[in-house]
Length: 199
Image 1 (cartoon, one colour):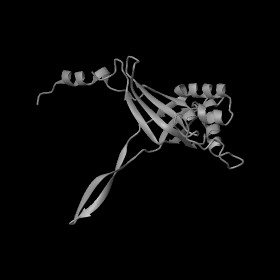
Image 2: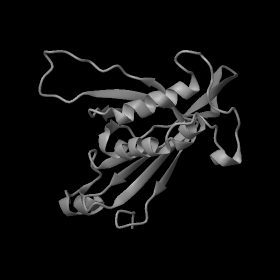
Image 3: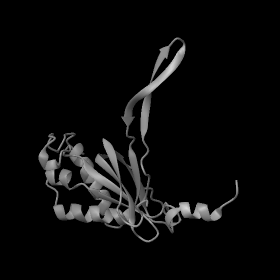
Image 4: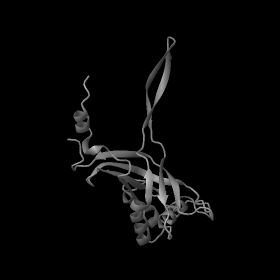
């Protein structure tokens, strides 16, 4: 088989997908509005997310096999689809707006002092068919021309853990950052209709 560099380059459209060309956006207005939080503060924090989220992963997908024995042989049939937790890494600014947003979100799920659930326990039309303590997060990937190519939407997600922030006099020349992990019920993938779409 002859080495055809030009054929490989032709197949690698837009010079390949780059790991650094992405943004994460998030909507959490419904949970925090239900808890009486100021909508303006929520919108500011969620708009900051696309700048402060510095790392994430495109989610994987697992279908767990069901095994059955037959005449000494193991037969595998498809079982249930599993959606793993999703994690992001966030840069911290001096106002800590994104972190305060995430902390307030967790507080309505289980309040710090009272150990009670602060959101309405209903799956209703006013939450667009989602539990009221959940939100949505979107990973958008871009090509080298700046056009969006792929979109992954985390559906009915909520923060399960917010990592601590390490602080030390010895830690100089770096910005604070921390991780946050979300549970989700499922995700959806869509291809954006621009120049980055497969032709």
